[in-house]
Length: 231
Length: 368
Image (cartoon, rainbow over all chains, first blue to last red; front, top):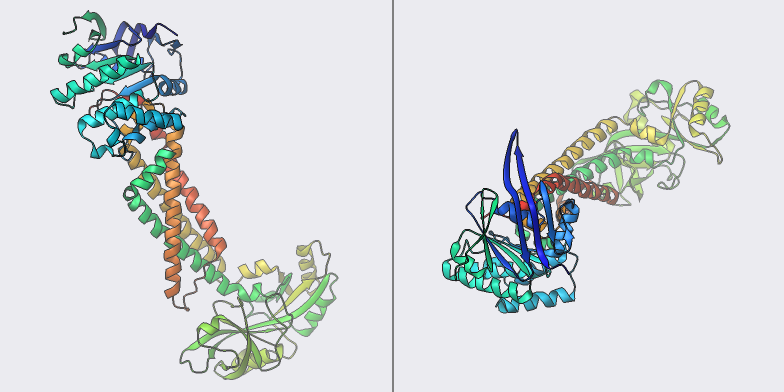
């Protein structure tokens, strides 16, 4: 088993728009160990989303290499990346994006289904995760019947469902008030650490970085190294 | 696929509009198909009933029974052609028919014939007739005597035959002498001499390998006839080809509308689902699984519309008056069902490109 959950080496991403070229990531290097949670802090347009997308196999870099666990994904084609994401990456999106006509448990099982892992074990795992997330009694509720915090917890359960190596959080508390946001962050910390899963957390809310082991600042596509994590 | 099925089961309301539109389009298609079949069968039953390998008209008749005239000498020549098996005369006269106890005059096609077939028994005795069962809907019963034409020639109906109408007129089948009596009494201007028919029904002997060639031989031998296959004789009935092409064009247009409705609906649904599809792709859903789910939904919506449309058509059929020549054939319903489902698949596939182009990366950084 590889020591590092995520290794980005000299990753560069350039978007071309007509004759213009926009450098979204400029020789960014980042290593995240197993069980480590890294907060990625930066203003809008700094390249956070691009970095997260490349780390999760949603985008391919223009230059550099990306390794998740023992898998080098830089040269993967779209089909390979799709399979890779299903097996090894968990996502929690800012918009939550639960499937509106599936109940809480089914929203967890949908990712197992996508990865071809829909079996009794997956159903058991979904039940266990929902219990751990305090949603055991809500497993049959549709997203519209859940509160904002509960929906976010379902999304966290969904991200952990396929036992990924790496979970990527995109502004997970932006739609929540401070108290609820802190509760969700505590839950993320517990779940990620408890499982030894690596996590990258994109946020622009400095209050949430205290839950991370490390905070990395990104400005104009450049990673500026570690910044002090609030106590 | 599981996801698509669950959406259909749990959010059926979302598919109500497209399902409702398709249901009425299916009703329209089935009704148009029924009308086409009804008109076709109601116009061609007499010719399809005689089981002919060749129907022989006089050459100058331009393939019309009313203009055709085959005398006994010509018939003898046809009978003498090598390969010809059975020859029987056939005459058709279109006249009004008075049914006892009914005030309306029914349309009748009085057919004089000689050869029994799979659909026709041996000719009845003089003065008696087999009537097409459609006349039962107009009030006729077996054992009653109808009066034919302005001359009111009486014919006693002794039994029913099925699917024997000609040009939408109800078939009344009699032996040749009775037909001539009816024709000459009502149409003295088109007097038919003894032994003369309008056309001949010819059945070839066993082992004839080139029916088309034999028909040409018959015409060559007589020098005064034009022989058609049964299928060509059907197509020569006035209006049949035009009717068929008109209805086929209307049905084709309706099927096109089915495709457009499905395509538009699922294109809009795909736009609405773009965020969800992006997230599912991020979780590892393949384009194939998303497109398969959408096609499954299109097929199931079309199948549901076929069932509902079929039920509505059945109910409609119960209240359609017998004068409307609509006939629902299982083969037509099956072919339309296949066409609707295939069109729904094609309509669903219109969204293929849009689904493929949804970028999973768009699931990130979107707060809406």
